[in-house]
Amino acid sequence: MDGVTAIANILRMEGVEFIGCVPYQPLLEAAAIAGIRPIIFRQEGTGIHMVDGYSRVTNGKRTGVFMMQNGPGAENGFGGVAQAYSESVPILLLPAGMAREKRGVHPNFYPTRSYETITKWSDEMNMVERIPDLMRRAFTKLRSGRPGPVLLEIPADVAAAELPEELFNYEPPRVVRQQADPADVSRAAKALLAAGDPIIHAGQGVLYAEATPELIEIAEFLQAPVMTSLSGKSAFPETHPLALGAGGPSTTGMVNKYLKGADLVFGVGCSFTKTNFAQPMPQGKTMIHMTNDEDAIGREGKCEYPLLGDAKLVLRQVLDELKSQAGAARPNNQALQDDIAAVKKDWLAQWMPKLTSDEVPLNPYRVVWDLMHTVDLDNTIITHESGSAREYLTPFWEARAPRSFIGWGKSTQLGYSLGLAMGAKLAEPEKLCINVMGDLAFSTVGLDVETAVRCKIPTMTIIINNAYMSIYDNSRFPVALEKYNVKTLSGEFSEVAKAMGAYTEKITNPTDIIPAIKRGIAETEAGNAVVLEFITKDEGQYSKF
Image (cartoon, rainbow, N blue to C red; front, side, top):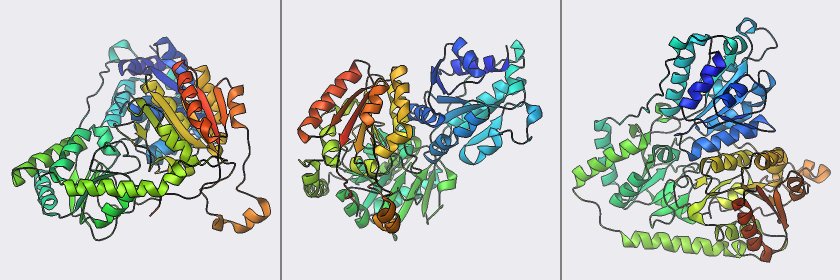
């Protein structure tokens, strides 16, 4: 067999059912022969976002794979891979490369070297005989430690070279996980029991480790409130009486109160990296940091109690140690739970005028509120866009089950949400998969709605169209705003989506919001991609503290 046939057969052995691409490269035909469906995108970025969403929702059990054309295709994919790297998503990139004799000859693009800074591991298949070993190493890295993109470049001459049958000895590698040092666990458990007002900060690592049951158990044992990071939203059920919601640029009244009042923060499966999209950790708190990434410990702040390992395994270690030290769980703290409920009630009451507004143009908060109260939350996966759409959605959406909400924000590429929703739908075809995006984001990637139509991926896209870039503070560019009107946008986006074959509606009246959503849901159930464009006001108030 030749090199690309060997690669395709390995992908088939790994359970890969589809591969995203923008043709052409030699692996496309080999994959099709092996029974792997090629999905052709309008642009590489959205295709990479799609395999990203697929890997997230399958929790890495089925890996999203994207292949790029030699030269410009590999160049165009850079942004999508950078986004996945910032969000720690395990995807496999297989760019075609120049023949080895052209390596280093200008102007040939060399993905292996160029992608080193935005991948967990970047290498090339430098010999056809090494393909099984390199693919095994790639999948080992995808399944172990902190997740992230892995890239293997396929040089043109290696793709066509012959691999002797006796050297094709591939077996899928096992997942490798680690526990924490028992001495570290003992110290951390003692600190947790000594804390008067602990809070648990849960990140995306809880989702990847499938550690929600252990997280719930430890929160109830300690009677400690739980907040999540933006990417960790849905790791803890927000219907639980100890749930505070997600932190981020916009957050909840509960997070604000209990994070400030805590004397100890127990970070589980998070990085504590300081970004514009992460909840700032107040100074002066005792910090316990559980992560599977040794590079994150102490990265930007003091950590008295580090715990290195898989969130599920280490939470179980901590639970066992808490039981050993304390003997029994703390009694149910009804006063705490009642206070969390009261804070939530008061916070929502402040926002209810916007969440239920009858304004025309529509208030975007009304769109989000009606959407949440119309869909079946137990059978819906939703993701937000960067900018205002994120702020409207994240604090108020009730995430009940792991991976029902795809939160993100370490980097914020416009248009990310469209591909994420498509990947989610491929991973969970029976669920309603929604992305909420602004008009500028749709302008960036909207042509790939045609991909959803052509490839029969029936997602629902909600466009918040205020014809304005609300998220940017006007004080940033007063002269440019006054002289050149730089924040104003335009476009008939439902008409664009209709021309590409999607079911579309434009909604301008508050009473039409819920009926339009119901019709959209019915269309997705009939197998149609849906785009609902809501004409909204410029709403620049967010739930910030």
